[in-house]
Image (cartoon, rainbow, N blue to C red):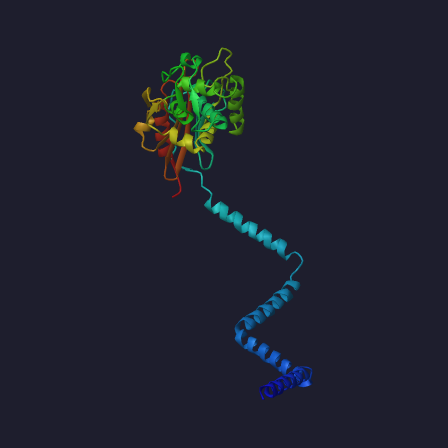
Length: 354
């Protein structure tokens, strides 16, 4: 009995399979599949109606843009670029600093300097000058070139050892001792704040030959646009041949170029600096040789210099609001008085746009 039922079920399954295969091969099944596909596409279109509409609108917009583009004259984009350049040039002109305006006929003071120059830094306008292109001994203002040359070959945290030779140089010294070790950054501050010649000497022979270092100093002069300058030593001493020279205009350019370096800009405005060696056995408080830092709050600093041949020399920067001035006096008998008188004259003679 059970065997008969099993046979019947097997026959029924086989018949059902045969009918199913016949249906799958029939036109009715094909139609059913097509209907299902159409329904699926329709359902997808309904679900995505909004994105499709947006796409259609973009296509329409692109078509309109293309049609508009085809109607443009051949030189349209050339003229558009010219107009854009004109508008941009007008914008640059509108934000460009304006030179100060002379508001008074006050005569320039009778200062002691052999040569001088006063420059409005933002506009590079010369407000006053006398023999500004005359080459004269620069004294220790040359140490700005020493600092810039040093930054070409050293890292600020590099350790430098003091050689015996440099402890015996002429001029202002920080009384460094042979064998002491300092970070480069600290020796640069000693050079720029205190005008330490022993620091400058050390920097000049610590990594390259002395001659190569002097070459780097004169390379700096070229980069800064100096035209009448020649540096022959890293300290600014008068040389026997009288060839260590620069003009007031050169020193103004050198000062402006130097303070573009953030380290130098911060160093030259320090009123004092505690110099310490790496062993902690040496410590010396160094006071800035530029006393105008203490007398005029708006002083940025820069560099002093004094030798027998140069007399007194000073590169000085004053900055307040839109006023940014560089003063250089060379061959002076009283550099600080000369600059203060010159500063008073400028502030009473010129006005700056607010």
